[in-house]
Image (cartoon, rainbow over all chains, first blue to last red; front, side, top):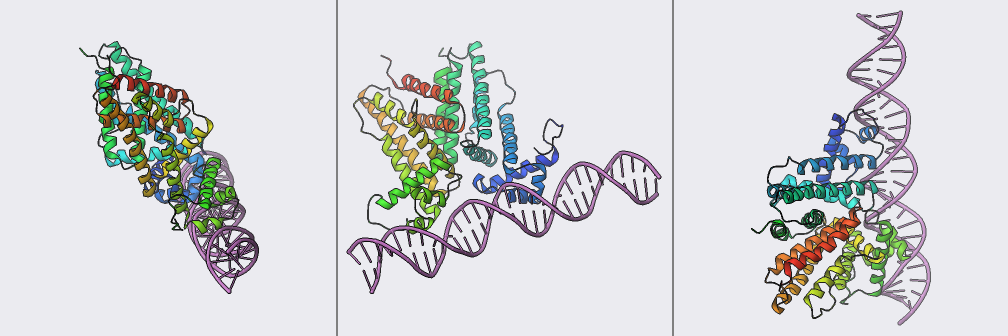
Length: 202
Length: 202
DNA sequence: ACAGGCTGACTGAACGTTCGGTAACCATCA
DNA sequence: TGATGGTTACCGAACGTTCAGTCAGCCTGT
């Protein structure tokens, strides 16, 4: 960032830029995202953006941090008492059964950004971190379920990785194909996978 | 395509363009793919490309058809006698346990192209078709397994969709994160999922 | 002679980035 | 009080580059 502000979080101007970037992303998609378009959404000149960030890449990396923050906040609500519910909660957050417009848009933005991770190492590290975070969260819930005796004694890591891969795949399909029915079906199938794999048969 | 050639398949000139496009994609990635770069790989001028195709989009849509063809050929080798082996074969083709450089590159190209499906309807339709094709292939193997009595009487569509989502998610993670170990683990976990879900416990 | 396949030079638009300037707001000190 | 100087946040215009796409003309084989 250009200004080394002492703040822990985002200051006002930068938050506004992040939101403008988000709007521009929604309106034009990652491929057609330009400094001009972000500036238009911000209702400032292009140069204003260069006052706050050194380059387009700099701005975009900052935005990715912003977006990942949001995404992580979304999934990490406080955990309840029942591991079953917690697991279902995480899945519903990541892969809503019937996503509203806002959820759909956020996911589209994430998929768009993610495609950049193929060639941009800073992006790749962020998504590596994000995926790891999701797996760890899932793992912990499963472990707690095992400790509480409501889940069978499985390998939490293995199950968590499997769940995460399935979620990612479904999200990906939703964003890049017209197979919405298949996505919904997979979402349901995932619940039944958890049921048969984790739940104790009394 | 610009030329309405009566040929069923690709003629020589077009095949060379497709291969040049593939090389350019590997060398520069989708984001930095330009007509000039394809022309460089082809060792012809830009205008030569415009002789064969009306626009960049036209060329790219043709290339996607070409790539999807290749991908489908890859997975649809003749089916053997054992549904277990066939299933494992399809999975290994789509998600090699230890992919060589060529497989890795093809997958990267596919993920790059796929990100375009978010905004380009022609692309989206192609990937919808491709995913559907994979699910159907998987479904048929499972159905055959059930008929032969080697698989339990499950819902083939549901299992096939689940497998496909998991494969897609893992492939996606491989292309966009540094979690190669997790990808390999998920691949193994997928086999064990099939084992516990499909195989008859005698 | 002529058509198919191609070239090289070009255009206009869009892009990221830089730069000179400026208005608003501060603190300092006479 | 009010002049001085510095800082922050911004603007408009321009720069160099790259891009998709066009076009007049040139080979080469028939």
